Length: 253
Image 1 (cartoon, one colour):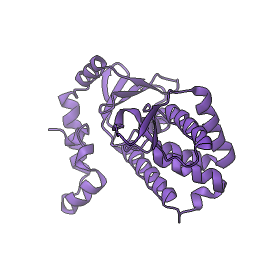
Image 2 (cartoon, rainbow, N blue to C red; image 1 turned 135 degrees about the horizontal axis):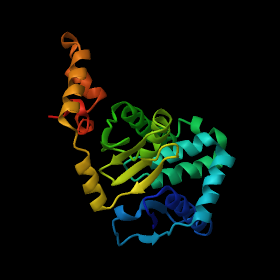
Image 3 (cartoon, rainbow, N blue to C red; image 1 turned 120 degrees about the horizontal axis):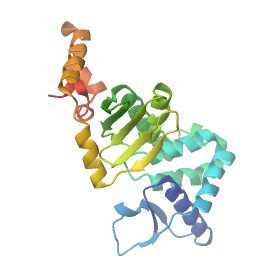
């Protein structure tokens, strides 16, 4: 078996898909699999081929998905890539089937790989929507706000449009502490992703300490709108699991 590996980046995955597909054209009987480079496990029965990111190859794959399939298929593939699991091989299998059957691939729910990508997409989309509601900003300087989150999936870019539209004239940053990634917004400009080094992440963690008066005010508001008689902790944990509460002001000690 040939295992093609790629860096943890969508353009890198697209480059890997191009190389694996190209290889398959001349090696039709050989099994091919895709994995993230850092997650690969060596095997005496497999040969690992690391594929470097190639913008030209990646663009060809991405353009083909958009034009020969549909924007819906591209969205499905991209959202599946953002899932916390190593989904590269699933995306490759989906695209092999998709380019065989055409634009109706998203409706072929009888195919296991199509259903799997739909589940991956739904999981990422649901988490994006939930974090739109639970992001808590803390003002660390004049008109500069920072929020920390630790989502299960890589959803930062999915939050950009909502908060950019809602807070266009404010400088803010949403930090994915688990991935050392920051979604940065400078007022009246578009958002961009920034990879934080260990020193930057440590510094950002320190400035995120919430001032006590603000914390008390927020908790007071949170408690005042709650109806004690209707408290349902089980349902509360279902909609807002404990792992998401680490940076939510109302749940801080």
